[in-house]
Each structure stands twice: as structure tokens, then as C-alpha cells.
Length: 326
Image (tube, rainbow, N blue to C red):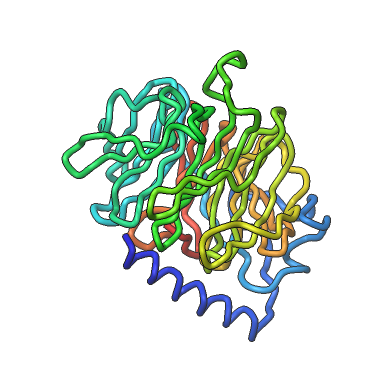
């Protein structure tokens, strides 16, 4: 996994350099998308405001892969064996998709896992609502706790995870998975776990905040945070992994949830009206319409050009012209 991330970082730098030289705008949205004239970071249409490629140009239709789950979340592509793992929160299970459509159980009794990611050793990390922890599944199937407390107090209910190339783990911690009376922390947070295991609260939101999706830019110098009650916030990632320079990225997104990023730095945001796609400057390219309200998304397949979307009882996908970060 470390080699894969480093390769994608190199690709991302090349794409960014090419975009800076050409400064060419994209065309219209592709199949299954709506026009990008809606509000962006500054109300602009990304086709007019942002350099680089239009990520929705040539997008395929959003198609159903499988359904009859209870609440799908947390898609994560594992390159080593070419499978997609995803959570069924209320089904208390992590499923495995072997494309195109073979699905089996990867881990039963998942602790009502939500977001999934892979550490720098390629081991599965899970944000677990039910156990209020971030876990790691070892090669033999043993599940261990990475963290479940902050300063001696139980976490709320970890929600989503992003991993930096050096092994630094970021995760969000809203109270979605617990009763209000069970919350011990006096904030809803965004946390950082250093490679040595040290835990830091990088952002402390008010009790009515709902930190949700989290993702890193292709060069890993920017971290994006979705707050379901508000919109998107961006932070600068310092060399040691700490965050600084908090700034609004897109102030208002309806039901902002899980995030994905492509090699051009475009941000894919699951929202109430579909998967919104924002340029690196916050302008809106457009929206991929999804039959059910989406909760999360991730790039998959060998060429990283398939966007997998978890949406309530279903798992969907759309083929895109440009690759994403896996």
C-alpha cells in the first residue's frame, strides 16, 4: 500500500503541473450528471473558474451493483487482490465485492463499522460505531483496537478515516452511533493518530456539529472535512501531520457525508442530491445523480476509474474518464 500511495502522489504532481501549464477549462458534464451552475465555494461554475480536466466529462451512468442491504457505508478499494470492502452498518457486517458482482462476507460482527481505510501495511482500519473505536484487522483475521479513548474518556462513535502515506491516521468522531446520554467527550472531533500511536484532537466541534467524511488532497498537503450540519472545511497538513489554517472550503452542502478525491484534486462529496464534484478551488463541476441518497464513495478497479457509491440499501458504481486516488 505504501508503494501505491507514493505512485499516486507522483501521478498527482504530474497532473497538477500539466494543469498549471495548460490552464484549460473542462467541457460539460457527462452522462448521469447535472450542470455545475449551482453554488460552489464562491458560487462559480467550475468549467469557467477552475483549471484542469472536467471530472464529469464522459462519466457513465450510475448503475446498481447490489442491493437489499440495511445501510451501506465506507467503501475502500484493496489493490493487492482487487476487491472493494464496504460496511453495512445496521447489518453489522463488512462485505467484499469481487468485481463485477460477486459479494461475500469479509468480516461478520463488525462493531457496526462505518468508514473503512487501509493502513500503510495494507491492513484494514474500521471506524466502529458499536464499539466506539478505530480497529485494525490483522492478516490472520484477528481484530485489534487502535484507539477507543481520548485522555481516558470513551470516544463518541468514530465515523470515517483517511490515512497519510507515512501512516498517520485521521478520523472523525461524531455522536451518530450513541445515545446522547452516553456521550462523554464535550465535543465532536477530528483526531490524528501518529505512527507512534499518539492521539491528538485536531479539531473540536460544538456538540451540535457532525464531523463526517474526511479525505486528503493528492499531494496530501490539504485535508478536507465534511460537517453534515454545515459544509466542507479545509486544513493545511503540516510536515509532522498536524493541521493548521482552518478555512471554509464550501460553506453549505446539503447533508455532506463521505468524500473521495481524484488525481486532479477534485473532491467528490456524497450529499442529499447525489455525488457533488468540486474543483480544488471549491467551484462546483456538477452532480452525479444516484437513485438512493449516497453516504460515501471511493475509487476502485485496476485503473481507478470506477467510482463506487454506497447509498442506503444499495451499492452503485459509475465509470469515469479520469482516475481517482485509491
